[in-house]
Length: 396
Image 1 (tube, rainbow, N blue to C red):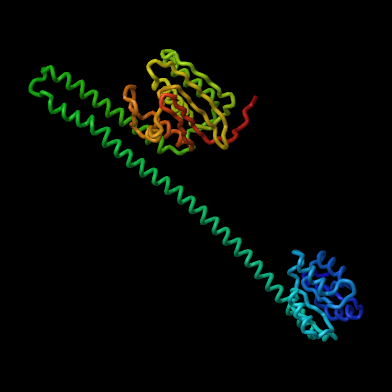
Image 2: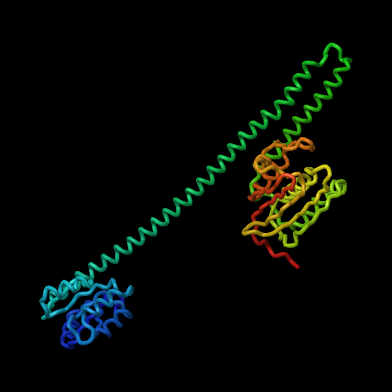
C-alpha cells in the first residue's frame, strides 16, 4: 500500500454501504472499514485515519456517540468526520455540527458528491494541519528570538556593568593619582624652594634633602601600587592559572608570617581538611592569604593575644576559605569602604591602606568575590569565594 495515500475510515453497519463507498474510494485512498461503533473507535485510535465517514444510525453505539468519544480523545479529536445519514431532520444536522462534525452526506449516496466532499475536507484538513505546523514553527521561532533577545540583553547588561565598573575604576585612579601624588609633589616643590643654593653648606639643606628623599620614596611607592593594580586589571582572567593544593599555598604563607606569629604569640587554628585542588593564580592566592593573616595579627587590642581560625568548605560552585580573628572589629557601616584604595580606618598600624583593595582586586580577577562579617570588639571574618569545578584526577 502506498504510504503517501490518505487513509479514510468508513463506518456503517450495512455491508452494501461499505462495499459501495469502498468501490468509490479505493483507487484514490487507503480505505479502512468498521461495521460498528466500538470497532470504529479502536481502528481510529490505532490507525489515526485522515478522515472518517460515519453512519449515524447503527446498533450499539450510534454515530453521534462515536463522534463524541473520538472528539474527547486527544489522539483523534482533530480527525475530520463526515456523517452519512438517510435522515433529513434539521435537528440531527445541528447536533452533528455541535459534536464537531465537518459535514454530512445524505443517503442514497451520490458518487460524485461523495468524492468531491471527501477531497474537499481532506484538503481543508491538510491546510489546517499546515497552519498548525506553521503556528508551532512560528511559536518556536518567536521563543528562540525571545531567548536570543534575553541572552543579548543579559550580555549587554553584563557589558554595561563591566563598563560602569571600568569607569568607576578610572575615576578612582584619577582621584588616587590626584590626591596621593599631589601631597608629596607639593612638599617636594616647597622643600626645593627652601633649599639654599647660595650656601650648599647650610645645615638646613641636609634636612631638606632627607625630606625630599622621603617624598620621592612615597611617590615611588604610589606608582608601584598603581602598576600592580593595572597589571592585575590588564591580565586575562585565565592567564597564569594553575592547579594547586590549597594546603600547599597556606603552608607557604604561614612560613612567611612565622616571625610575626611568634612575636605576637598568636594562636592559629586550621581546619581545611576538605580543601580540594583549585585552579587559581598561585601568587594571587598567597598574597590574599598573607594580607588577611597580617591584618588579623595587626588589628588587635593591646591586651589581647591574637587567635586566628582558617577554615574551608565547598558551597554550590565555589570553594570558600575564611580567616577569622578576635581583633578590634569593623563597624558595619565601614564594611564597603575597607575595599577602597588607600582607605585606612586605623592609623596606629603601619601600611598604606592598599591591602584589602588588592585582596578584592585579586579575588575578582579570579572571578570570585569577598564577603566580610565583623563586629566592634568581637573580631572579623573574611570569606573568599573562588569558582570551583572538579579538576583533573591526580595519580595516587
